[in-house]
Image (cartoon, rainbow, N blue to C red; front, side):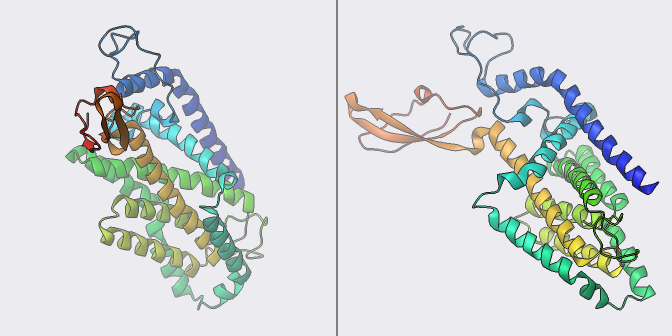
Length: 346
């Protein structure tokens, strides 16, 4: 019955996300149109022309970021569009997560090699590490109690509470952590659920402990992947406040160790779960920041040459585009002197 329930949950989640993506396609055109108008400065009442109504503008450029088609956490507090955005982003996340091995390159290959080698080495040493513990009743009991910090029923209310507090106090950072934390948790739960069904490893307190494809749910650790995804997200969100990262990672480490002490997981289970959780938290944060930079190009400075040979004017302009599109150089009005440097913005 437990196996059937896990399969039902996994399939139901996949179906729900697929339905959410399908439903969102109905509003993709509207969302894309709104985003394109925001990016190009074209008024909705003037669909055939430029912002000045001349009617001679070219068609709006296609949206290069799929996430521009949907609502973003800072754009709205209304539950319906926010949930729609969240579910569709999770679909995109799962696609990126499960195809990431095929996108390995020389810049990130070391991350895969080191984490893979460490997991393999721990699998070989799992029995010895487990036997090194006292494995008394007291140890197991306290391990289970401490590990509850990383349980879903503990982490989810904390993340939800962050969003509620942010909405109540109009705190954008708290709302962002609430939304991105929920995204990280759901990504982690889906990844852990699928990998557990694929590995089916027996737990240390089950028959044939450590055996893969034995019907268990030991690999990877769900507690570890959840708590490390949130710890990674918080550490990246507050990267200029080191105490936040130190505290988050310390709690995640305690939860990880307690799962081994409680004889619910092997060392390789918690290491693999923690590693994947850390990468998921970082991925969600970086995707968020990348999307913001894509939508709000004020974050992206551009150097534009200024050449006027007839007047012997040469230089360059440092431009901060405010719409996410390639700036129109003709709009830069600051003159450049001979062999001078122009700094202007629009």
